[in-house]
Image (cartoon, rainbow, N blue to C red; front, side):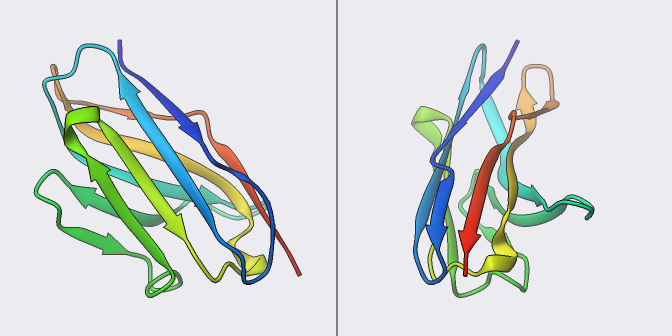
Length: 118
């Protein structure tokens, strides 16, 4: 069984920064994609950023230029550096690991709250 443990959420003022971390543990040979989604109250869960094992990345338009995703394949860990935070970034942030071998399944973290005050 694979588990994802997130850390780094919290309360920050607008314009501030936070760094989220997510470590995958268990029997893992490889992870295809790792990424972050977020869900604000009353809204659907949305993709924030994703990174492939090759290092290629993709971002939601709303966070481009402010957030940076990175990963350490040796540690099965993904990071999200969030700068210039805005109140609309307030949400629960979920880590996801897609295409985890064996046996090619997806796993989600429990979520971490990020609150940006104005």
